[in-house]
Length: 318
Image (tube, rainbow, N blue to C red; front, side, top):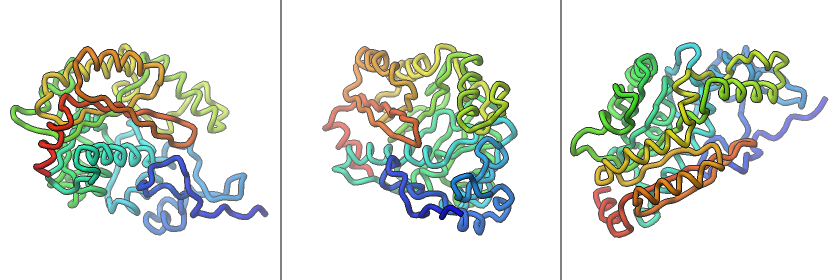
């Protein structure tokens, strides 16, 4: 029998503060959430694992991770909605913390004075959960999907540690991103967004087929989305470049109400166009960070309409 791999072995590509740098400790996860045990088995390498092509297994793993690492007693999402991989979501939050630190003499600001807007919070509410539990930040999560908003609100209301820290708002206009969400005179230190990166339903389905084929699912041509995802979560007309372009346009309207705007960029070929749009928008500063989870590299694009002196003045309130 092959010996099990050391659970302490690190996933070196993850952020240094990411609690998920080590391999999944299924013994601890099963203690945190006993129902996970029915999905855990020994894989072909002799390690404990789950079937990542099984949506129920993935969702139950997420429940266990959120309970063990972030003290979330209740977490659930409606069937078919995006069930995000927790390690990658945590990475974005930690890189965002570094970004805020860059405006604050390299000190990460913590506590309820820091206010973050999650554009497209989804039914899962994962970014606000991790951001609040790790750094004590206050969050507003917005979404255009009524069901997603209801689900995220329910997660917040059921977990007492989240009720005073996270507010969920419905974006009533499909043409706007920040308008109708950011209120008059309201200020945010940071916005985050994981945009729908496919340009069509067909492209999204092809991506799901690739993912299922890589996971060894023989029925990959008719994929079951192990991580789920509704249309608004997976694709938008023009893909992520068009969505981020709209976000950049909207951000100009709120350039004095937000310190840093950020978004994930899945496709590196979109960066050139995004930089051009940011330059046309006259962003004072543009940053790009790379983060890697498994074999996937994703970029974080960040921009501010405030120069270094204005950023430091803003941070004095922290």
